[in-house]
Image 1: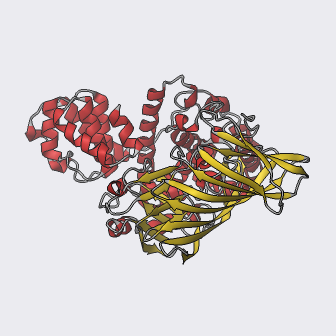
Image 2 (image 1 turned 90 degrees about the horizontal axis):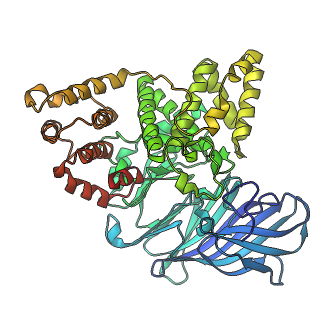
Image 3 (image 1 turned 120 degrees about the vertical axis):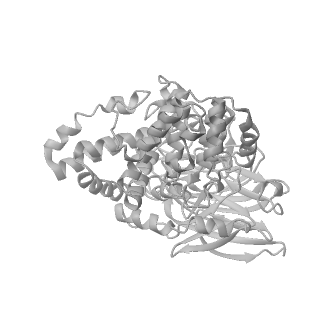
Length: 579
């Protein structure tokens, strides 16, 4: 095996010597073999002197050949022994030493394999329409190396282009702008072309192939899905432009040209994935009342925090997700009022507490900047970078004087680091520099009161407990206490108890009851007769109700839980239900 990068503990690439500038993928999609086959052209620039080798990350790829563009002589390469987490380093010996500033282009002919974790192949039976196969990719965190041989680290920002051959009548979409299509010379395929002109990390390369239709929902947004779902999906996400415009008002102009949404089949494991130009979202958001579209606010916020300003490596993942949750809730506050933002923060804090209980309060992975040496970033995935990161930023906003001081700094942060990948130390230094320039040394002394070590390095809950507005939570708390304290007397309650609750208030009400551990099976019978939670469509309420019932060993809910885990694969729901 090659040495692990000095820049990124989860990559073998020699990032201290070469940086990828551009990748072009020329691939054919074969559903029968369940493989992609073709070439990756990787253009690199030397950032050190006397560079004699290029190291790319791969995992579960079959390498057929490596050439150096412009050279007729074969190039020497070796695919090193596989690491159980990070895959195999593709080490290419260059024919001469390259000086800093010189560029070179590697042309790698390869095929994916059935073990390529970035690729999710679905049989027709796993789709809504049941007629055509489907392919989607998920490259975050370190799965891009199983899609193509690349420097698979968020430290590297690159542009990319692609030519993707797919069988008719299927369509290909990517996390890039579509630049055209041509019929294949075989008469049975179509070649789709794409270009991503804004620099981004490799984990944001994304591809989907399926029976797809689109509906315009705004001046720069189309909603894509299978034809059977597209009208419903377009209706659900009609307010997408409002989210984008609110993000622009808070930060900087949107840089990516298009903001399209793709509603995937039910097996997609996340709420959303912020692939540029084409956000992937789960069909569990299709509640029929637009009540779950806050996920889109989150993914749109990633257009700035994560996609434009990116973590240097996965140990600083909170710079992507903590910032994104903070901006997401700013957008919610602008569109729905400050109590809604505060309520979302309370729900998030509850989720953070549950994840830390699951990991264990002394588990090193619950630190905001954990050590990920010899750790799969997927194994470290939790609410910690999201909610602990949010709580740090919310705390800082209050500490420095509120939104009037902090929001101009947010915009300056994006302007300073757009197109770059940064560490927590660089983030902190800029915060100090900005506050010193704009607010003087008194503000620097205020920042010095922060226990930075505790926030970043100590495991468990945040060292400071933020106070949030309880306006929207009070009714949930009062009703949960009444329910927990009462008997199974139907006359005490009615459907009017929750008729004015938002979906997330209903979720909190159910979570509080679950935490009380005092709900009998008779009480659950009564609640379901009054509130009719078992057959609700909204997946957040459905999940919270099922979790409450499972903790109480409420047998009538069992077949509904089985149905729920079989119809969707979102980890947020599936993992806790199986536990």
